[in-house]
Image (cartoon, rainbow, N blue to C red):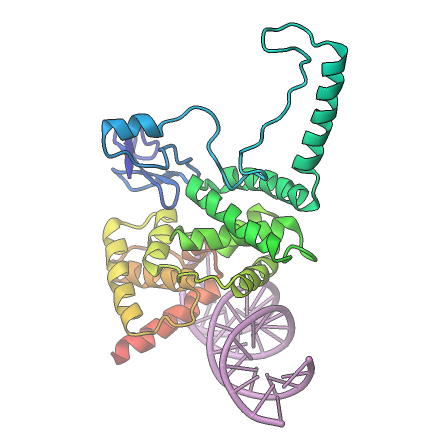
Length: 302
DNA sequence: TAAGATAAGAGGGACAT
DNA sequence: ATGTCAGTCTTATCTTA
């Protein structure tokens, strides 16, 4: 969490706002409203434990990154036909440089695999902005995509779809809540296809992807509604109970989170419609109803 | 108008053949 | 490999309070 001093437009107080680095949401600490949900992570991705470390770790120039087709290590022979002191080159040196430059270019960017990666990572740059992904997630995405590419899994699929699946997996691994829907709509991909590709990657690359944390789903859905902190807490208690008793197995966690919030809001007398909840959770109101009915039955039994 | 009920259809996992 | 089955979620439509 990091604090800023943006003034919240909802409650108009000079309150602090809090950036949640996990969900990338900017939240007012007075009223709890989500002011922005696309905040860029602007901290360094490393930690320094003392002054020396801070000095040695800060750096000039481009960091090494998996998310570049050459991992950011390229040396490019420039176009200016000048030597280091600015004088022009004589003809023979210049023609040598021309030949070197030509080969430099060919060997760097023109293997088919590299071209694929170049394309993919330019797409990744755009996705990063749209989804407010942190640097570690981008790196992880790039790593997964590289593996997929090496295994020939991109063939017969589009680059954006494989990339989107990589993003989704990276988010899951980092415990960040991004749903299939979130990622699909921003990439103009059908949710089904994204789900299919994701499964394929997990299967083929033998990835161990942790389950979505249902608590984070509660937080995410609640942040999109106007429910009170108390209702949210109560919902988390219920979720705790539900997870322990195994009712949640096989259910869409967002739908479940939504229905628990609905249940919680009923208990606390807050009026929120199923439609509002459903919209916040990204599921239909029927799903909310079904889960809700389930919950009522199963919780009464226990 | 919100909530509940019902039905049809899609996609995928488990399991048997 | 292919088919079937139970379970989940979605969409659509109708009824109820």
